Amino acid sequence: MEDIHDMQRGVENPEIIDLITLDSQEGEVVLLVLENRPWGSDPKQLEQFDEKLNRYLAYVLDGFLERQYPQYEGLPVRIQIDCVDDPKDDRIQRFLEGVAMVCEQNGISLVLRVGEK
Image (cartoon, rainbow, N blue to C red):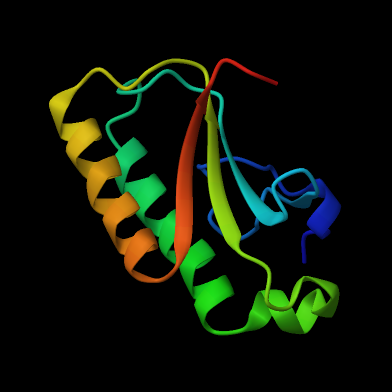
């Protein structure tokens, strides 16, 4: 079995949450999604994003986040996608708008952060 520390972070690996941190300034728990590839560079990219984001949502909505991090109980949650460029393709933009809507309906914010590390 692969050690969790050896597993690759990023959209290509839906098995792990890339990073969980507290934004103390905003008072939000941040679940970070790392995407180091340009948008549209892989034909499987949206499928990979869909699987990864569904797992993030399940992690929060099914209570796993609060069970593993009880100190974050009751805090707002933000899923933040850190990526290397802006999504220019209409299909990608529609996908992200749909994800943002699902997140919002469940009390989770979705933020796209481009080019910052």
